[in-house]
Image (tube, rainbow, N blue to C red; front, side):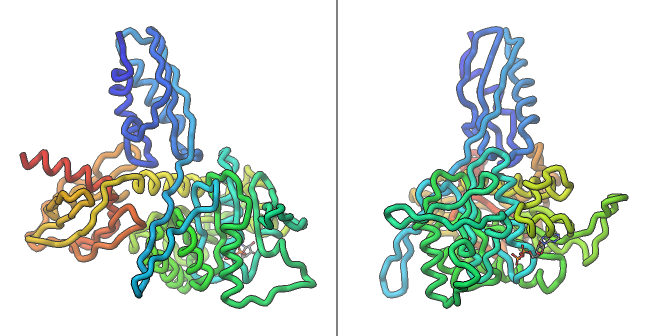
Length: 464
Ligand code: ADP
């Protein structure tokens, strides 16, 4: 007689490439029904935009058909977006404690779209990202926090004014299934607003706490360019799930993007990745790609700083036209090649959110990390300690350069490292991981606390 455990054992070989783990340890397998010769189950992914849905279904069916007495396996792929954790209290200078930042009621994830300077296409990316996520079936909102140059109203062709409920909470407008709030919707040409820092700060607080967003899987926040009051207020008043940085191939934008990226590190906001806009021009007749500016800037800054590269978007006149006519290109022409690029980026963003949420959902947190006797020592929150040999950690680097995301296999053989091999930098990433820069110049590995705890168990077993 087959049991649920037999089914789970079989499914433990099926991997979700977005999270680099098997579907059983991710607790994705639901609703198992065994009635020989038929077995059925649901697999509930945390990324609605996953590009691996068909592969996961096929791999699962194949694995289940290996069970004795079974000749029919039905696997249904479902999804449920996970929520990022609430914020934590912060100690302020002088002994005071700042309250824990809170997400707007009903909102699962807040994703900031940032850029180092204006005009790189950040608002266009935010609009198309919102629509692309919505097209997967997820519930999505778009908050235009670019208070100095709000453009989302125009981009979505909205002209109505948002109304307020009896408690003065604003009701967002809706276009292409996306809930939208923008300062541009609250002012008119006749009543322009001259902004000063404190007003911008208050407005952002109102956009987070005083808007009836409802139940949302993702709230995309279009930030003003650069680093200023709005970014600071936002990172202090809500727990951002992560930030996406938009840049262009020119060097100057690249340097500024780097500055934007460094802004999020100290405030514990994970950088989900970099998008390079106006990356190349694709001829609509012969489809040849021309890189007008230097090629690979976004990718190189990604690898230098150890953050994922989410994709390059072509320079496409249709994008401008669509934006000017009040309909993001992904909605206006879903079949355009550039729309496919936006959708691919949305998939990677949703995957990054799923990964951050999974990694954040652990009680196994380090209290202290130090170098001691040629080892990296972690003192865990539960009082235990692990001393990791450096080569043990380096050979388990989880980055995409070291591990194939589809198979989970290590791309290189065990590295034999010199005796003076050591970590040069250990930096926090969000509140769920550390990034280690090694003396062999490899610095792209983000070691989640959850992953480190598993490595601690492996090390302990090996030492017995
Ligand atoms: P930002 O928010 O960074 O200031 P916008 O999104 O407002 O930038 O875009 C600036 C201009 O560039 C707009 O006219 C927009 O239509 C155009 N644009 C954005 N992305 C592209 C693209 N991929 N191809 C062509 N034009 C683009």
